[in-house]
Length: 581
Image (cartoon, rainbow, N blue to C red; front, side):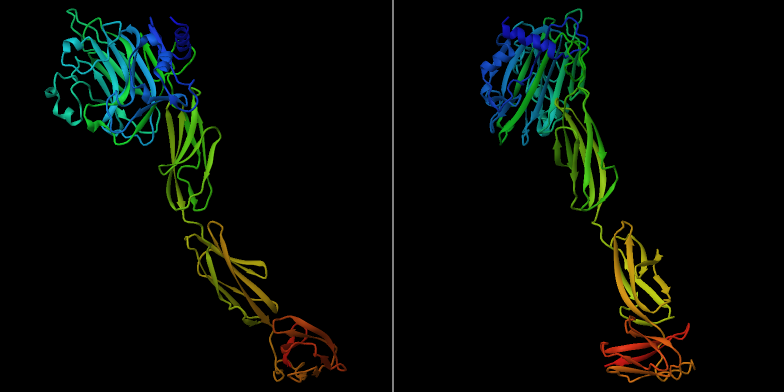
């Protein structure tokens, strides 16, 4: 045994076991491509012999179509080609003979891969010889072929994965094409291999494929019993199990190797693809003499099998069935972990489309929707062995928030009222989103009244003359607002020079001339009486003390317009209008 081989076997035993309770284990082999960590380069036959033990390799074909790099091996399937001599590659690696065997590997078909009619994938093999010539071709001589078998897998149209055993004593193996049932022919089944569906694969996704076989036993007369067991796990889930296989035609047949085959199958040109394709492989593990096998395996540092469990995922934000608006910034936040310590990444998808990949915690990003509608958000965790788990939430995005509208219908902007009049406040209000909440009225900066529903009408009776700023303000349920302002004037009651009949005390008071140019004469005042001149907008522009002896007011400094002379009369002041020219 070479030093390299000793090192490889020792590393394999310590690094990764495929079994729970190995009893009389005969060989436990594993290899990954981690040492090829840089970009792709040719994987030569010399590399293969060094990595997989030269003395144990058989039937090496097509290594010129294999490259290693990025810690994996890459198979190339040229367009318009079929068979192992022109597509992919193949080799067989011997194992110590046993009645049971396990093979596990990871595979990913690269984005854009064309499944065409199908192709071969690795599987276990066995024979009645120590040289392990168990991967046989299609042959009508069952008596010869019952001394060997293979249990490779195949991909078929649309990514369908099938169990494809060359087991001459099994019903799937036919002596001639005339033996193939009609329904099997429709599926494209040949006469040599089975067509036992396992699951359906997708491109651009890692899968951990693991198969276990236990050979059938024999009757006292030496005839084989139909009690062989085959199982296949995909990403740790048992997808295929049969307990009626006849793989060994004679007692001397044992599991003694694995066939690492990958190429486009079939024998006619319609099996070829019209475009080049690639697949990646990694983490190859094989074991003979393994018992109590379960799905998935990880390194736990000893001779027991630990099932590779899918990573966990929890989508914290957004909450399921939550509602947002166009333009809102939505936080996408997930938590993820992996009990095997193999967490690789978390991907976010929105309505089926890839959105963001995050390689380490915190698994958090943001999303700003541009259209209203329903959004399905998926957070999906991946481990380095190809297992994954996802969490879905559904949210609703509504149209962008729009402000409500409001229009004051009463009073009219610029209108003038007399002191003591009741002023109607009225407004129309709407909300384009149907979420109108209320209308508030403010008068001169102070809250006056809230109206929760239409009609938005109320009354206001001013107690002082002056200018009034009235605001009607609409609110929607989201807190958006819109307001409209009107300005009115409230004047005190106005008496003309000829309207003094209601108050005899000031009936004799007169103001003239009107229009006045520089001086306004006020006559009829007998006692000291304060007077004010008020502009049309209600502002006091002059104050004077008038008496029997003071009868004139200088008005030359006033601007042209209508004014009011306010004459104090206890609690009932009166005004006389005049025009300044």
